[in-house]
Length: 244
Image 1 (cartoon, rainbow, N blue to C red):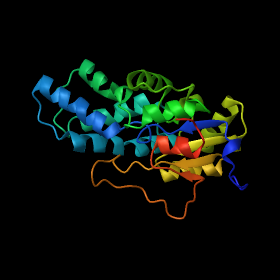
Image 2 (image 1 turned 180 degrees about the vertical axis):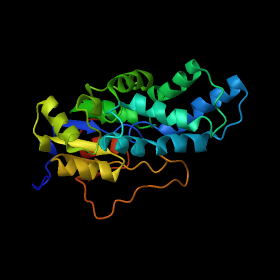
Image 3 (image 1 turned 60 degrees about the vertical axis):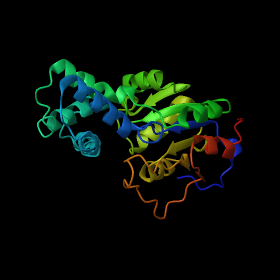
Image 4 (image 1 turned 30 degrees about the vertical axis):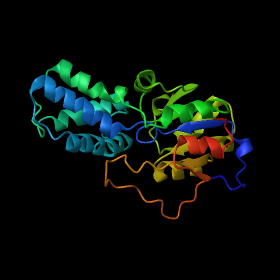
């Protein structure tokens, strides 16, 4: 865990959590569902569907960690969760093509309003990369869709571990060729940042209060202290001295 005083000039690379931090997964999934409803004349409570799909994510990863299932990339986990949800939401009649297209909605997520401009500012001063449990193909397709100008796409898939396992954070520093305390993890989720701290990375907290919609639950920070807290990516760029 990092113990030295924070010096922003020592940061060489920023690595980003993606789902909820860079992209608005919930609104995007709801929009995808609404399009499907129009095409198929369906009546589905898509906000509840999106929440249930995302809620299956951590339990699915834990099953892999526990050895109940083989290590699986996020596309595979999302599909397993989706198949379990279809009967509950009256979607059992979807064809295989329609199921797979819906599963790949995670490749087509839209960014938060500040994400593209903020990342471009940060890119002018730092190496910027994903550090996500999303698989490489998913993250590359998402970057194309959302206009995210990553220098590099790093994924838990490369390490055969999911965050918050330390191998993911430490592996990112290794692949980027920098010391761990020269890498800053940027995330909207305190638990992700705490794990990054324990692995030796610096941390920036960018809360996204609308991740779970209006009135949604925001994970508490508790006693955690991060190197920077910023309202959005533009504010983070300003704090780190990146030009406008």
